[in-house]
Length: 120
Length: 328
Image (cartoon, rainbow over all chains, first blue to last red; front, side):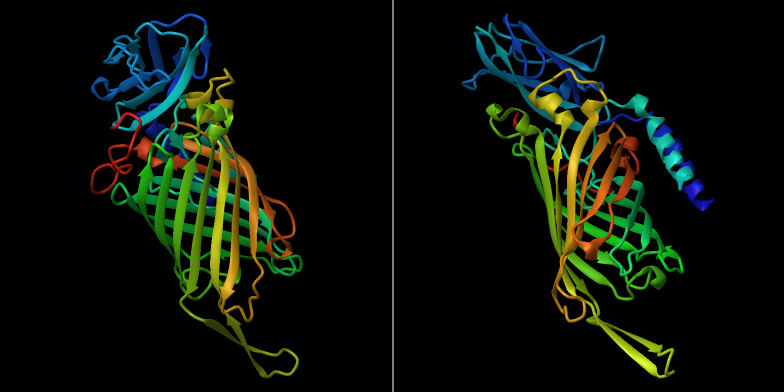
């Protein structure tokens, strides 16, 4: 009986957690993670699992030589605060590396990186 | 037991709908889940409740053992924390009688002294204390205290070149500790049932190297940092894992011998926003470690995500400075 009581409050604890916010992780990207695209994208979109704090959420895109090919400041989508957009300079065929670092609304910082390729 | 497991499963699956992100032990882009049989290398606010293990232990003759344990970990600062663990044990020897009770209370003080985000590398040192005479002798709890200074390490392989492809989703953790009993020997007085004479049994308490680790493959990491294969969401939350935990007596071994004992634990961990659920097999490495394959399961709560502004944050101090790809 005591064991039953001990476990019974777990759903309540989890329910309490439903109103909290967790770390923001990359759910999907466009171009997608590890993909090869046939035409050069003009922008990059990153969709996260939590809403983001715009002032502390950044993205950099680099070519194979390490040169920045993004347009500068990333923008959090006004209609969907879990999406981050950044413009890209005209991309030549090659492999590009994306580095992102974001702050979710509960102040947890997460980061990651991935590559995509623009085909010949 | 079936009722207990059903309740745990209900608690877990009741919140599958809020899944989508990871939490807790992050080192750069790498998330290392809480492991069941060895400790993860991070300091965090977390609660493992319950961990249930069922197996045939290494006693001679082997007894059916059920362990139900809980562990609460609390960050004092961002890099220093303390955890408390308790285990309730039921023993069912083949010839009886059955026994049940709590094992000794365990405490771990841990300091995470290195967090290298770029290389997905984390290191910690800790001092484990098993407090003697806080458990029941009938289930094997020692009457003496044991101190175990321990080194922890975790390393993800995301810093391999892109050409390594899917291998970058691998990570390893490891730990090695040296267990020092506070008493060199334990003396037990008894009476010979045949002669009625008093007997004295002296058992030397060995110093033990406790070592272990895990090899884990992160499907979340694969999806977010290597290649998005478009797999089902459930698959993208899985971390297949193999843990191992071994103990090797190295000193004061006159009565214990020096045979290494322990288990290997292949299994899988499902990680969500606020909790993880794990299921692993318990495979003894030799007869002295057990006589059959057992099983263990765990529900683990990320308190830093469930209660980020109250009990889930450190008591003192600011965040640990980490090196990142963006120089932040």
